[in-house]
Length: 303
Ligand SMILES: Cc1cc2nc3c(=O)[nH]c(=O)nc-3n(C[C@H](O)[C@H](O)[C@H](O)COP(=O)(O)OP(=O)(O)OC[C@H]3O[C@@H](n4cnc5c(N)ncnc54)[C@H](O)[C@@H]3O)c2cc1C
Image (cartoon, rainbow, N blue to C red; front, side):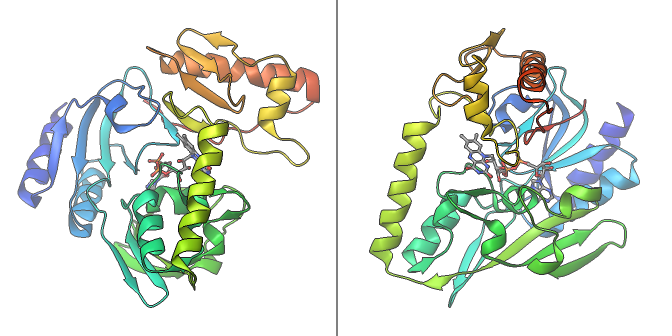
């Protein structure tokens, strides 16, 4: 606990807002997770880098999160520092380039692009993540993904302590993958997206169409972390989970959605253990029925 007190003092000096013992269920869309020893809420890049450097210097484990829409936190919380980027959310449009801070929400980015008459980000409308989380995951939907529009990323290289600007073609972007997943030593600060001029009304119409499809097909009325499993070549996970008779199957408060079997929803009071047990059950049924173990898209955060 003394390392957390040290960290609090360093964050205090650096002017970085922080909260002791904040419940992580308030920092994720699953609404699951016990308290974090400490949550930092930097308001600018300098604060974000200070928080990382402080945790490194203190040998405190830490994680950087965006909107927490693709993570499952443990029931007994996180014993280190959780750095939330939710206060770093500036968005600028210059010509056909949209630049966003890591914590800018995709909702706001897609709206800003539409208002500027720029097309390319419509697919992301309704994905409840941030710019940083979306680049990290190479988020995608409705036939496109971040790699299709990303121009470059400014990131903090923890090992060298230097800010680097990396072009999109050096980021190892493929289906739900980026180099940021590989070693966790590069933290996304902001990103630039290259969009195409388009008709604002057509862009808005496409966004509404996408949102209506989401509302019709996804269980947005329940807390979740989106699709639990990655697509496998030749298989749609929702379809084969449904064909395996698992729609509605539940463990505690966690259930396979009746609306979209690719989602696990928190029907009320679900624990991380419930979700994990349900994930293991689905994996074993899919292995038995289809001969492979599905890979999770959701990221399980260790205690
Ligand atoms: C209802 C619903 C629908 C969804 N639909 C889709 C969809 O259509 N397509 C899709 O791809 N996903 C979808 N998702 C999943 C999720 O929204 C995306 O993966 C999103 O991009 C995650 O962004 P986030 O900010 O919430 O990331 P988080 O969940 O906060 O973090 C995800 C990972 O990124 C890392 N990370 C976050 N920010 C940074 C940073 N600045 N630097 C380095 N690492 C960072 C975290 O450490 C973590 O490992 C959906 C989720 C929900 C709940």
